[in-house]
Length: 409
Image 1 (cartoon, rainbow, N blue to C red):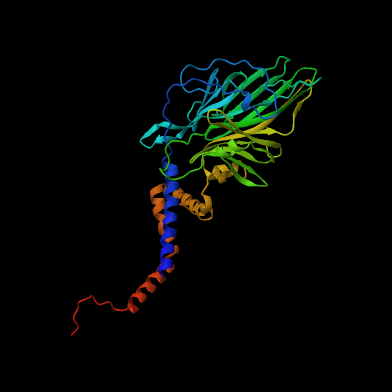
Image 2: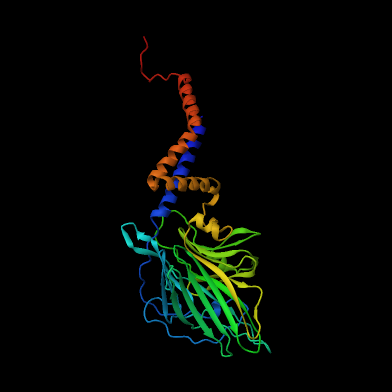
């Protein structure tokens, strides 16, 4: 029975740790990374474009003076909704910064939001898209913008809180490319549309790619010595949830054909994930770059073909925000698995589900944990009672120990 009691205490300790971990995830996100000292700027090169493609000629503006810059900048377009503040740069049309307005750095500083995405080292994290142009082909137009191209951009707002960012670029042959970000109110899901209008007399061919670029630096803060995974993740219907860590990217370039999957960069509390159309096949790839930078992305396996005097478009989605399971499972299959409980998932997931239900009733995480602990004690009451009775019987049959030197009369 001592063994049963020990197992009960160990199980209760694990449960309390998981509850405390979930509570910390909600109320105490990691702090913002402090500013870094100036270093020599080294721009990202064309090596971060998908493998097997040719980079279209682009005009590169100079880097912003000062800071630890690794990406180039042109004009910054700011978007503010009720849950996030984002910055898109017309250089590449990248999503460069995201501040989560409902997640302060510290509970005592509610006006300082946590910055999830950033375009400077040591913790660079940006989202990029473009077209992977092939070598020129006779009778076919292939020149297209990538994430080194300078767009013309504008921000359009409507009366219902929706914000659109429209980025445009026209090739020398007259093909017009539009990249449109759509931000909805009270949502961490961003719709991204690429539209190609071909007014010429020749067809245009190209492959869309979407990628995440991130530094290998671990985020500051968190739960002290508690290990949390920071790195890449992909999901497919065949292999399900699979981690692609930075060491894997250093050792070997990923190249895998997936239909109906997604790719993400995750950290303890938050993630950024590209979710393409479910019915479109993509080639998923990774790349290790200089300065401890890593790329995880996907390239459309099938060419986008736009006939003369016509237009075509491709839609995808980008989730950027906290790991809220009830929202993630609605975005894409398996995306909720980014809330990684490890080998204890079979226990932790139902417990966290119950904790959320209790929180929805009482509205306080502290009392929610107390009530859940009481429920667990009630469930194990009979086992505990049996264990205590057994230990009491064992004490009765134990031999009497007489202290040395005691005199019997």
